[in-house]
Image 1: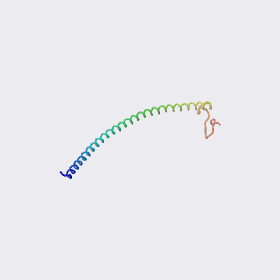
Image 2: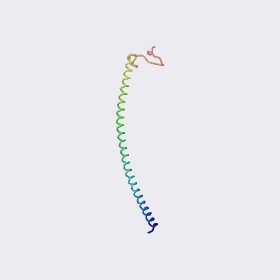
Image 3: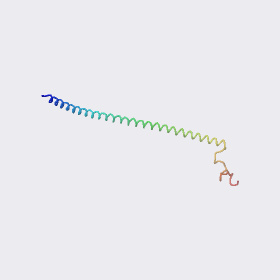
Image 4: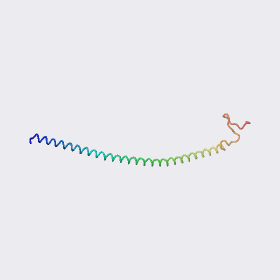
Length: 115
């Protein structure tokens, strides 16, 4: 065999080797891609589960907070109303509306129909 024949034979061998290597690389990439997709799907499932847990915990905490806040606000409102009623009793002597014979008509106080 001549030098040209040997070079052509070597070149054909390198072409076949390159094609085989490219095929192996493609298979490896497909396999790695499939594994990565599974890993990402697992991570996403974990994220969804963790998010659902956080939502449930936050809803419980928020429910407790709003319940406590409602009780606190109701207590404050009752305290203010009691203070206001006590101050009114001290200053006016009676609760409004229980003052006998006094009505308001036309912006003026009247002591009854005879005044």
